[in-house]
Each structure stands twice: as structure tokens, then as C-alpha cells.
Image (cartoon, rainbow, N blue to C red; front, side, top):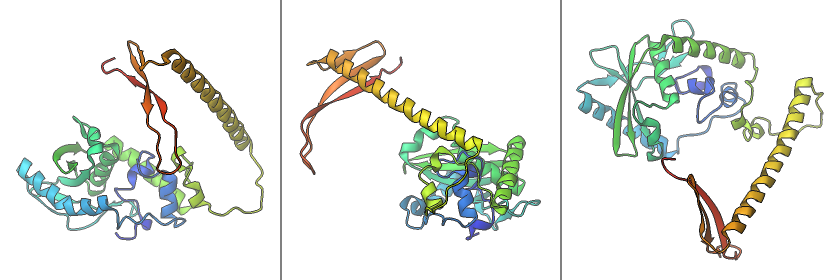
Length: 281
């Protein structure tokens, strides 16, 4: 499964459904159609250590659950759609259950609190269950190298249907070279997809005309809001004057002193307005 262009895998399904934190449907489509090269992850340290620690996570899962695991002996293909495929990290010995092993940064610990599991991983494990025909999957994660959690994900047949329908639609767009609708996160990606500027002007449909008008109106509204923001900040600074700040029932407002920097161009000492919401309010 080294060439990922020819199928939709478990790590793709969140992007297909437009909920991946790393990739949009358009970006995935551009990779699958060969219009852009996927990012080379071979030198990424988080990927490198994630691969190394996979076995550590699997062994700790065994220790904490008294379940034994083994490596999955093959790659799996959907019985009806050969472009829907998956790999599985481990299988639970003596059962039909499977295990997905993850590592996560301490910065992402909140996403795993309580019963929470990041949506992209729920979709990945659910995709594995759908492809393999299994009913129960486990996900184990080592967070920040020092906190271990494991959670159970059961087959959700309504979700299976939604994933399958989204995958069928997406793969049709790949095969017919029809790009998905761009999302806000695609703004900077557009220059990678369309790096050259030609000399032709396109005729605008009414939808495009409306979109351009809305863009200009939005820019004007942003400019107005920025002016409003600056005006309120100036009023607060005038009220604070030579004091530290203002205390309200809901917010603490401070206009704090900041020392000038001399790393590049010498900057004057200044003050920074900082507003924080009080806890429990």
C-alpha cells in the first residue's frame, strides 16, 4: 500500500468527509489525481517516533487490559469497492476485535479527556471496522510520552453508510477529475494547485459575480470592525491612564509595560493591552 493514489485509506477518510485537521477534500483530491505530490513525511520526527512507539503502545495495551495482540497479516479491501482499503495496526488474539495505536502531543491531551476521541481517529477506526467487517475496535494512545489511555469504538452502521457514500462520491470526483469545493483552509493551498498565471480572462457566472460582491462587502465589514476595535482599545487605554488596568465582574483588563527589543531594529518601551476572562464566569 505504498502508492496511496489508487485508493482511499483509513488515514484519508476524515479528509474525504471534510473534518480532517490536516487536509481538506480538495488537497486530498489533488494528491489522488496526481496534481500535487503528497508531503514527504519520512523526515518528520513525530511520524518517526510514532512508528517506533507503536509497539510500545501495543505492549502497554496488553499489560493494562490482559488482552493479547498480534500484527495484522494483510491489508484489507472492501468486498464491494476495491478502492476502499485499510491497514490495521494489531488484531486482538482470540477475538474479531482490532487495535489502532497512536501517540499524541501533550498539547492535544484535552482532545482525549473523559470519553473524548478526536473525530479523525473515530473515523479511521470505524473505516477499519467497515472494511474488515468487524464490530469492535480499540484505540490506544500515549500522550506526551507519559500518559496512556485506551478506549473502545463499536461498529456504527449509520456512520458506515455515511462514510461509504462520501467515499463513493469523492472517488467519482477523482476519476472524473472534478475538484471538490474549496474550503477556507485551501486559501494558501491554491497557489500550489495553480502555480501559473496565464493571460486569459474567464467570463463570470452569476454565482461568481455574487461571490466577488460578497468578498468585497466582507472586506469592508472587516475594515469597519478593525476601526471599531482600535477605537474601543484607545478608549480603554485613556481610562486606564497611568494605572495598571480595569477590573470588571467578568474580565480583567491590563495595560502592561513591555520592554523594547534590540534584536534587529531598536524598539521603544511600550505597553500592551491584555484582556482575560475570569475563570468560572
